[in-house]
Image (tube, rainbow, N blue to C red; front, side):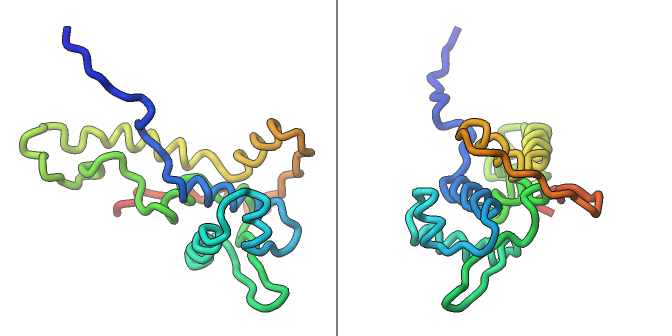
Length: 170
């Protein structure tokens, strides 16, 4: 039998920026008012230039609201319960796709490999999972391990729940 030397360390991996953005958004959700980039950098350990860059992108995407001025800062545009991990990843890294040939797209090897489109079921499962996890879920999990008092969840009066990221390619 032929064995593959596969390193499990480098399998599907979230980018550092998407990880940092998730941390920043959860911390923003824990603030009562506005938070500055410097304050968030101090709370999270993420370098301030990276925090500023991420907040700018998150503001332009509509996930956070920026308030300018001497007493300015950032706040979440919605509740933690309304923002999915899939949304954060798509905003920071672009469409979620594990291979170049997902969702009917072709890659340079499609004529030889024969698996074109077969990764769709894996990609769809990953998207469903990422769409089912909100920042509130991440916050609750972090609270369980940090010893902090859990924050009361806000009520979703619309009944809509989190907005899933649809097929990110189309």
